[in-house]
Length: 332
Image 1 (cartoon, one colour):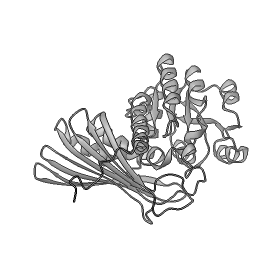
Image 2 (image 1 turned 180 degrees about the vertical axis):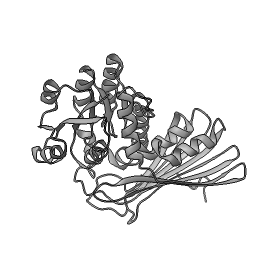
Image 3 (image 1 turned 90 degrees about the vertical axis):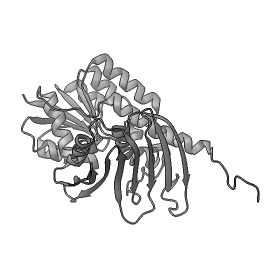
Image 4 (image 1 turned 30 degrees about the horizontal axis):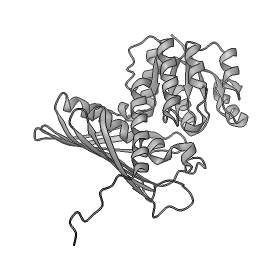
């Protein structure tokens, strides 16, 4: 079955997904919408797709099966709700919003329309993560320790917290999602943040440390920083008979890919896996296959991704509360 697709958002991640869709025989991209007519036109050229600057007009005019939404967090208005009401299956890039109220409204619309959904937490599709999930199985997880460090992306809106949500919401959400993926839902979170290196390029913390307690009893920690000259994304998993480490990176410029690696031990057996398949491509292919009636695997449906989003909002709230215990505890 051919899946007729429209895309809202012809920016960086949108064009990455278009590159994958161009290689999928069952995907037919017929319309592209962007607030920039120039960007939409450039992206549409390869597909011979119709060009729009208004998503409501596009949804009214086009006969579609699915809608990809790949826009910055501050730009989410009615794209998802209108798509759901039109009966379209939805692929939504993270972050899914800026506020919990917006995410709740979309979640409700998806449930009412009974459409399928996928949010772009691509690391769930990394072969390295798949292998870690298989190796851990139903073993208890004790500790999860992750981080995302790097620099400030060139997008002007990224450094404005009212538009991006800050690094925790916009970027490190991928690591917080893996924390939930392996550790389960979170009961409580505390956090500390500071700004000592990055100047006017951002109006939020350039380093954050968040600690969480999970319903399962596991504890986790995520650190983030946009003050590093080099990027490094990783996750350590410790539990019953295992100690595993995941690393993730991006390669390429024209059509970048998301790669990963798994190392460690399970029951004393060493493990080393280099993931040579692109996690971005795998999540998009799985979505298209599912919409087309195949056996695709939607590992990050909107209702689950909403929990990750709310976790990142909770981290920001914990930063604002400043509930630190001051030292020394004993008077000198």
